[in-house]
Image (tube, rainbow, N blue to C red):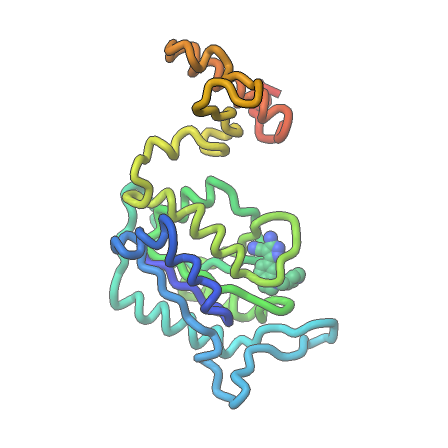
Length: 246
Ligand SMILES: N#Cc1c(-c2ccc3ccn(Cc4ccncc4)c3c2)n[nH]c1N
């Protein structure tokens, strides 16, 4: 899987060199390439923003550097088709270009599962008040474009969102996580929040571990854990429960 990231803060993504994703990159499972948008500027100040047409506070990111950078990435990728992950992908052979945006559809585990099957994703990290709309419109001429939001709060740019999204889908790419079984019983994976976890010691500060977990009775443990998932989801995120369980 190939991932390209366009940003004015390339150093931000050094975080992707560590931990699980760092190993996935070293193992060649995920090929991450970071591009400095300012490399596509032509003026002495390497300008990437300008005042908004129609007035208003803040600055808007100029279309020219974006168009040039995205074209270069897509042209390069066209010459080196990336291998899709196992499983059925979107079926649309065009590359996917994702722009984090407060105006985007909310990123969920379902999004992460879908992205994990893509052979190539380009992420465009905006800053300031956002990117000139024509960049999205022009890119959509040759790629699938998605505006995606981490959630209903305001960030200063797309870099944090892209880091979170890459972590969320990267761990689902086959070969990245050592034990794929560990991905199954997680919050949101089956639509419910995860059950509470315990480990040794059996007694800690006067607090014991639920007896059922010490029983060795696998069917009872599984039943208790599913009930805990439903109770926790009902308490914390009732909207996630299927109607019949609300
Ligand atoms: N994903 C995501 C996001 C963002 C986000 C993403 C990209 C950009 C680029 C620029 N900004 C700053 C800005 C622009 C317009 N309105 C408010 C703030 C961004 C915010 N904010 N909140 C989220 N959940």
